[in-house]
Amino acid sequence: MAAAFGQAVGLLFQGDGVFALVEGQRAGPLGQKGTHAQLAMLEMYDIERLWVSASALRARGLTPVDLMLPVQLLDAEALERLVHAQPRTLLF
Image (cartoon, rainbow, N blue to C red; front, side):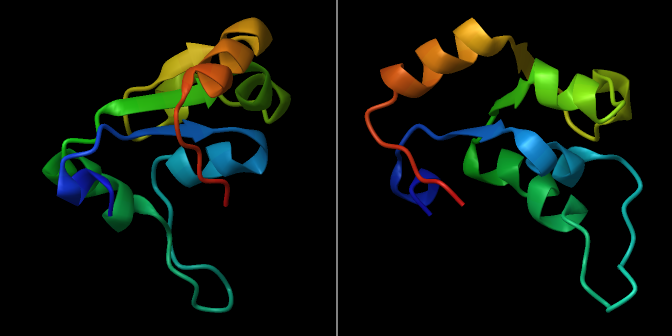
């Protein structure tokens, strides 16, 4: 929503959140939808900065090739610097 009002927005995926970026998602057993459609719309809102915790990706046996969008991998130090440099942060 902030991007629609001209705010610079970036998204950080960490922990199990990295699974939201995995290519080829389908509806789950309870009919829950994958995130592909929502993530595909990020470009429409000029949200191009996507960061991923490198350790979270590694811990889940994933690589950037497994993801549907290009991301910037962050090690623990870079992740900490990024979070501290942001004027506003929303956690979900």
